[in-house]
Image (cartoon, rainbow over all chains, first blue to last red; front, side, top):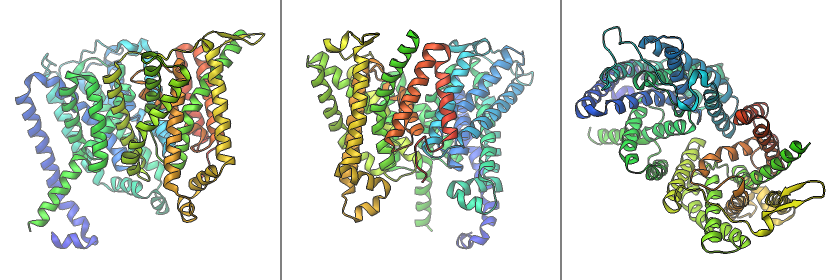
Length: 335
Length: 287
């Protein structure tokens, strides 16, 4: 192994050997954390399920921000599109089979990803940020005004999903929803690990590092980014649909600017450009929020602000990135 | 005709308030390349100080404005020294996160200190009533806001085009390294223009308190609008910012008057359309 570290030409050998182990470790860690959460907080399963839904949003944001380097403050548009699509399918069209609802959410998220990707990628830097903000506000307003379908500011309620696979009903304690969420999360996680290692994933990382060089190599920067946006939209849409299935309501807040900004904060807190970082950041942020905002929502805002400043100044790689660096240094000092 | 006229006056007053606040953001963005999402927070701090001075201390309106501008600059200087200086030249995402962090902190603290209620800044008697223009009457404070906007635009134009500070500022914007090697103290130019930007934000926050009411979420609610103005106008361009403010003020006000249901909708559609056609802003220059 140490020989392959030196010569870059042998690097692919490392890639095929070790990442699978890390995937397995990652899945094992998620499973252990899931079981731990189930045993330790049996009364908070609804919160845990919401954390899983937000994890999917943050993973999807990681794909475009962490891997492709697109700065966006409008990613909740994709999450909300999935949530509303699943909700509307259930309430208006009577499609209450949970897996179909998730599928509809994924498709709607992908479509929203295509639309917002095409709009947002038109600009760079500040213009890109402003476009992303305009997109999330447009989605928000659209959902607010189309109240016949979306329930407007009252939210969309009355979503009653069928039992999962016809066997497991969604119970009052949220056990079914929780297990369903964990299974979805693991499936998405494994697929995304494969995606980011694929040649396409490598191309996207290259685009983040140097778009001019990638286009000089003959690859289309914009087409790749839009493809990534569509994939990212599908992931976020699954998250939104999971949220709709588990809470059985969809509120306008799922399409809010705050939701987008918070997702970005979670991503950066955990460490952008790493799927583990996205997961870790979401858990830490949401759990903190749950504890602190119960006391006083405005203190929560102050703390998030201070936390953000601290992360930017002292841990620009995020919690996971910093921890991984420390672990690597520790491993190197102990041969 | 009556509707037309009142839309015009409201749009002009709103656009001028936007201009006073956003021009500082445009200057810092053009000069220091910092995406400062906390700019609205400085306007809000100005509004709070003025409200405190005028309501609780009983000072005059003019004094309140001066106190607000000075107080906000005093608050902003340590922030510039310890936080902003570290993110000059950093990637946009870093700057966005840092300045959003500052905004969140300011919102939380403002709510803790002043409470969640709306704060008013009592207007002096001269600015309260309507003013008769012969054929129409306008609210005096709107006229005052328009006059202030014009004064700020002219003052800035004079400062940047006709003084030696303006020459140094333009030189630093165009090429910081070259300006520094020619003997311009770019650090001082940076600090001075940051103070100027913050002071203008505070000034606009006070003048515009009738149109953009001061409350803790002010910083987040209007942040988007200020950013939009800068990106539509083109960062660093004063005429660009002026045109953008008047244009967006007109679109927003017209939308609110004629189709109040879909006001926001039109605003953001227009923003997307403009940025789509001019990705660098109306008068932004190519890199």
